Every structure is written in structure tokens, then in C-alpha cells.
Length: 143
Image (cartoon, rainbow, N blue to C red; front, side):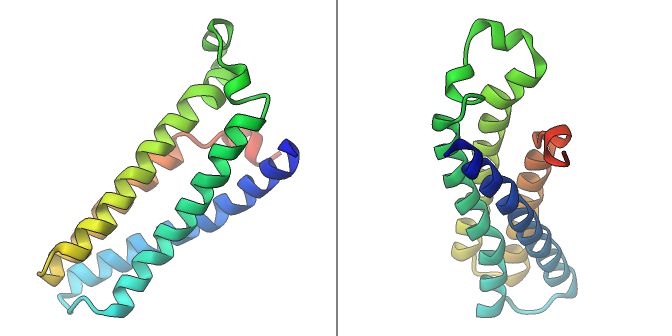
């Protein structure tokens, strides 16, 4: 089961990154062009938010069933960089990233000025994207 979830988690990562990048760029273009924030713009922001949340849910399940996740959490794992990445750094930083992205979307819904709505999306999604990219296990992802 853990292997199937790991493959799903790896596949969904491409969709989540694609959605975040598109939403980030769309938010930047909207902010710098000075146009009005419309329902279409809100849906583009959702295009980045939904895959990230689905990826998060699969990752949480994987964390509890994988031997690299919670079962690997020990003092010995903290001295090994790869084990520490899977057991602590990857989950913790990505939880923070999902929270930042969610705050950006929620904040954009409440703001009334269009430029600030776009700015909320591209700034928060950008920070979330950087956090996610910083903790992807690149060596394992491409093998």
C-alpha cells in the first residue's frame, strides 16, 4: 500500500507544482496589468490551491503508513540527512507551505481591491512554492 501511495504522491506533486506555478504567474500578471479581479481569477487561484491540498492529504496518509515517515522517527534518524528529510523536514515544511498558500487564498477572497487580491495570491503562493521546492527529495524523485 505504501508503494502505491508513494507513486500517487510523486505523480500528484507534478500537478501541484504546475497548479502553483500557473496560479503564481497568473496572479503576478493580474497585479501588474492593473485589471479587475474576476470570478475567473478566483478559479485560477483554486487551480493552485486544490492540487496542493489533495497532495497534502495523500502525503499525510503516506507519512503514517510508510516506513520512511512516522515509523522512522528516532534519534538515529536525526543524524542521517536522508532519514531526517523524510521523517521531519519534508512533512513539516510542506505543512507550513500548505498553510501559507491557504492563507493567501483566504485573504484574497476577503480583500476588496483587485491589485491587492492578486498580490495576496502571488506573494503567498510564491512563498509556498519556494518552501515546497526547498524540501522535495530531488534525488529520490527522479529515480
